[in-house]
Image 1 (tube, rainbow, N blue to C red):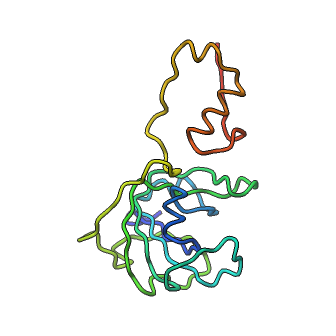
Image 2: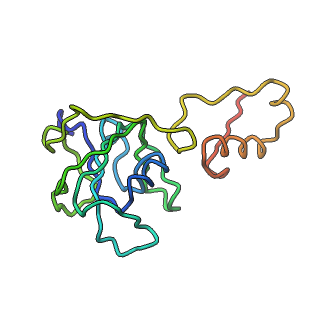
Length: 176
């Protein structure tokens, strides 16, 4: 990764509302260690995706429409193959940059805001709302009496609900 590549650009068929609702952009094949080094996510619109169930595109084709602060990278639960990743976001701003996509073959690329011509000046960032899949800062600690009454299955179900994932995605390790 080049020193100035602080930005991931994705070519997505999803609307800004869906990306915000899902807590980030997914389901990408990428190197999570490299993606985690990026500060910014720029979403560009793909209006030519033939999968109408997947696509809810609303912006002009090729335009940059959402600038987000990357907060993490986690496995996407959208596919079972475990090779897809969710680029999590903590805040976002709407942008309007026509023809920002470079027509590259790879829908994920690394660059910088400067190279893209995207400026932070005048942007009003909004923090992610509760209820999105944006990562939580820390999980609440249950009381001792609650812990004594929980089974592993119940704990997995409760944690899955708190984090917006399936119970199968929760792993609990007890060390003695």
